Image (cartoon, rainbow, N blue to C red; front, side, top):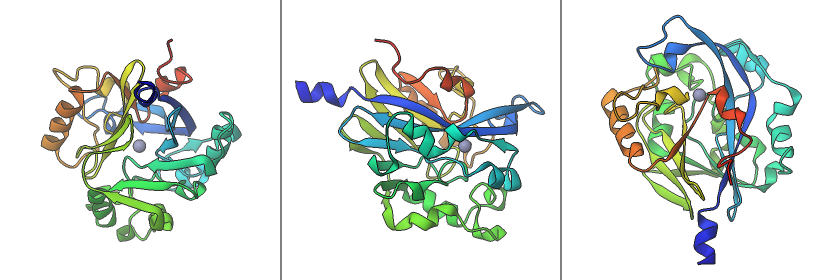
Length: 259
Ligand SMILES: [Zn+2]
């Protein structure tokens, strides 16, 4: 009994590593909000209180790089990834597992900081990241546009998977073709139920609000049929959603946040 309780006792800590500014909102809410601009966060999720520390996404590079190639960006000193973890008294070497939801520029740039971690990625994501459609090439900082994807630096520590797996008791990856072909979300069992780390499958809370009637896909996607099938899958088990870019997720220090 004791062991079972532990398995469902994870806590999830959203740690912002900076702000991405002037994002076209319809890129996050397909078919809605055209012409609106908003600021979003780039948030790592630290999973604590299980047998090992897990980090979901290592997120974006420094603001100079981001501003040069992608969007205006800012980061306070306390938002540097190592500083953000230090606030929770966690050092990078203590992270045993990194799960990358996908290989876009703003989700996997800091892998090299976590030298002891196994890095879990879907096979279909690696294949597509190497040879993306031209419309997605900059998101992957791909060879086809003269860039070198940052994730290649640490590919020796990649654990390449294909499908759904329980990574550790109470933490599962779910393959969800949607925003990208090899996208994976992370389901975390907590004492309050299943928290699903949606990352850019649902970049804002509002993507998910009407999941039973009209969920809103990201404006950046490959196949809408796959995307809606993935919505259906997740809606069957997720009790709560944690998005990839919504500033509101930072209003609580950790999840579940009530006793
Ligand atoms: Zn993103």
